[in-house]
Each structure stands twice: as structure tokens, then as C-alpha cells.
Image 1: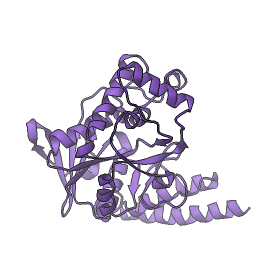
Image 2: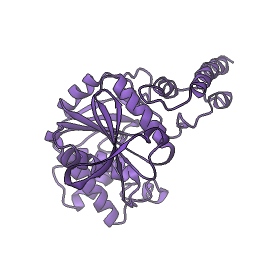
Image 3: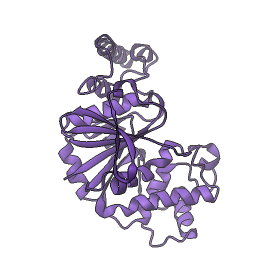
Length: 317
């Protein structure tokens, strides 16, 4: 199956982009990784060459390793990048890489742990999503009811009941199910136009705590899944290492410190020892893209061991 990856980043999240790409490549992904970004290219992508694609798309292309390429697209959107996900996925599938059969979005603070063959099979089963750490949001939960009312008040019908809440950091969509991306984007636009969502400033307490309780892209994605008739194929919160037992991916969500910012020994002394995400981040930090000097890498491998030992001591104390 011909597939593509996409992600979005600005600032120091480029470290996450590099590790995400490494972890996908090291587990068998071959193809294009489309990266939408603000600002400048990271230091490790300075070899990328300027290219022109379909419909005069300007981008930079970087060869990662045999069969894997990063295509850097500089974005000019006023939106917070988290609210640009459905737009970028649609552009990748319909305009940038129209020969692909499926597109997968990963947040840049995710590290893949699973063979790519699984993802290709997964997306044939339905829209691929992972449960959030806040897993159960029953159909009769007040916020879920408010989302449904919001959709009905804006012309949507035949809304199905769902009882699980899915994390917006990952979604895989086969071309057969691409309309879910348009629904997701439309819901964000309607919420913005009606004053229920600020596309430039997600997660505001104002929108979190007032009807229809619609503060961010993740709520819009979950409502799009309710409105869509597309089949879903879901894994539980272990799919992102929110609970033990996961084998799919690892996600450094709030309140976790991002692995590239974490002072491992200092945080361990504060009773925050290295997480699974920290460990797999450093595992994939050097190849095929080298993100750190050998000295920095060795120090953090040492810090992982010391931090883990401190964590074990604190738990036993």
C-alpha cells in the first residue's frame, strides 16, 4: 500500500519530528513524511533542497535514508497548528501526494514502537484512532450531549452514539474514508464562526467550561467521528502508553515534560523518573537522522539509567 505520514511543528518540536521519523523508518516505513512548519528549517535539515511539486507547491526535500524522504512545507496560516491538522491531511492526500491510498497524522511528540505493516492493515479496518487518557466519555455524558446538540443545530443529522474519547495526536485515514477530514475541518470552522472556538488559541478555559464545551481540535475530531458513517478501528489508551502494556506508540502528552527538554536526573529527584516515552525517544534519536552529538547521546543514556534507579529507590522508600 502506498501511504504517507504527516505532522506539524514549530519551535523546538523539530526534535520530535526527527525522532518520530527515525522511529517510523526503523520499524519499516518507506515513503514521504510531509512536515508542515513555521519558522526556519531545523539544523539537521540544512541539506534539504528546494523543490516544486504539484500545483506549484514549494517545499524542501530531504533524503532520510533509502526509500524515505521528508518534504518540508512552510505554512502561512493564522491558526494554531493543532487546528490545522485536517487541512494539512487533506492537502497531503488530495494535492501534495495524490497517488497515496492512506495518510497518517502523528503529533511530533509521539514515538512509534510498532512495525509499519500493522498501520497499513489497521487503516483498512476503518478510521484508525487511539483512546485518550480520558478514555470513557459515554453517549449520555453532558459534554457529549452538548457536542451532539451543536452538530444538530448546524445541520448535521444521523449522529451516532460513541462511548470512547479518542486522542487527536494520531489518526489514520484511508482514501475511502477521506470525507471525515472535511467534516473535522468544517466543525472547526463552524465552531470558530459561532464564537465557540478560537482557532488561534485552543485550550482556553472560557471555551472548555462553557457550552458547547468545544475547546480544541480533539473535540472536533471526536464529533466528526460521531457524524461520519465511516467504520472506526480503535485501540485503547495503551496504544499511546497512557496505561501499561502498549506496543503501538508512545505519546508525551501534558503534563509530561517533552523528552528533548527533560533533565532526566533532576526530574527523577523530583519523583518524576524517566518514562517509556523518554526511553524510546532516546532509542531513536541518532539513526538514520542524527539529532545529537555522541557526547550528548551518551550522557542521556547514562541519565536514563541513573534516573530510573532513583525512581525505583523512591518507589520502594
